[in-house]
Length: 264
Ligand SMILES: Nc1nc2c(ncn2[C@@H]2O[C@H](COP(=O)(O)OP(=O)(O)OP(=O)(O)O)[C@@H](O)[C@H]2O)c(=O)[nH]1
Ligand SMILES: [Mg+2]
Image 1 (cartoon, rainbow, N blue to C red):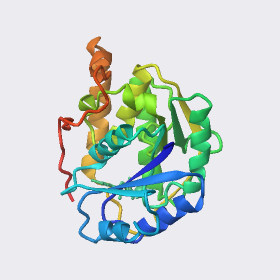
Image 2: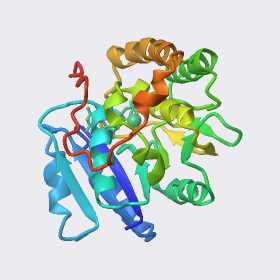
Image 3: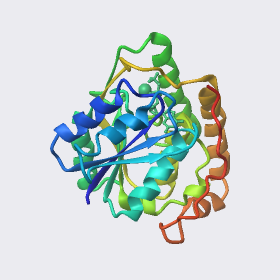
Image 4: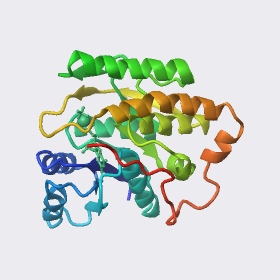
């Protein structure tokens, strides 16, 4: 058990089968875990129909409602740690992240990074087909995060990531509060404060071609306020203590401290 790709889904019936096939087509010993939040469009049923094609390689965790990206990933992290995976990936279902880049992220972690981030904003990174306002929002968020936190990451909202197991084991997930873009920033921030090495790998990010975006105003607001909150919390000594996991990672009793129900 080496590499697990966690893919959160909400209404991804147009993409889910193709993205799963694309990961297995790599033939690089990846396992895939889908975390579906009760998608009304039947995404979970499509995943189940693929179990016989990918026995003991494809897994599904179903949650009852749309509980947000952050808690979906934390659910997946705990699932992965309990099953001894060594390299744990975050990837979107909508092909914005190319499965072909998974191996590059993996190599960087294997070579010693704690986290490998698929980055749009380092040299060689690109964004394709995004409208100008989306690029502005994303670049603005990156700049804003760097100015406020001084975290040395050029694409802090990136959601295409490989974590070494040790990084996730070292984190107290109950201290991770956010669910949208701010969740991605918070994970990197916590890892940085815990002194793990974060490496950025250039990727081309392509706007989704099928299915609907789940982006909303609440996610942007959470990002703006969330970064300020992170900075504020980290000014006190107990931030590092809070975010560090001192117990066992087999944290079956884990309950997200703030489960935010997102607006549709
Ligand atoms: N389980 C779960 N998955 C979610 C939730 N919200 C979004 N997702 C999934 O998370 C991934 C990223 O969401 P997107 O809607 O693509 O968000 P985005 O990339 O910011 O928006 P677009 O650029 O418009 O695609 C996709 O695979 C979604 O299906 C959620 O609340 N729960
Ligand atoms: Mg997307």
